[in-house]
Image (cartoon, rainbow, N blue to C red):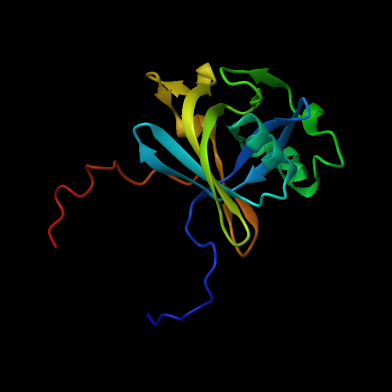
Length: 187
């Protein structure tokens, strides 16, 4: 099959849909984000590429901490709404019921089956976005979304984002076990 060269874009999939949370002026604020990844295993460190003009970024920088809340498909409308409106103009603190974890200034969304608290370790400004590095301090998971003490991704039901179609998707089907499927493969 012939390959066609296209312009560069954010085509690394999956891009997980998360609601990044931080308190701004004493109120919980959330923004959806998909430019997110794990960059270190010990300590667990994540990165978020966010436009620093977003109101949530003000809270991240002031509190030196943020949350990653993983919404399921049932929260798609509220998640998208948070991206369509600025916390500078609307009060997002009443969109979700929240709870507190270990870090100050880090609201966690009750209806998200998984919540991750991150301490800001450093940030790197780029041309448009800023990369926020966060060390994972704690993870909260709904009891029903655990299987033998580990997250059950079928029950957490994370969404992914794709571009350029600008669409939300559910996590797909199970394919094979990692670190196992290739053991019998012969090139």
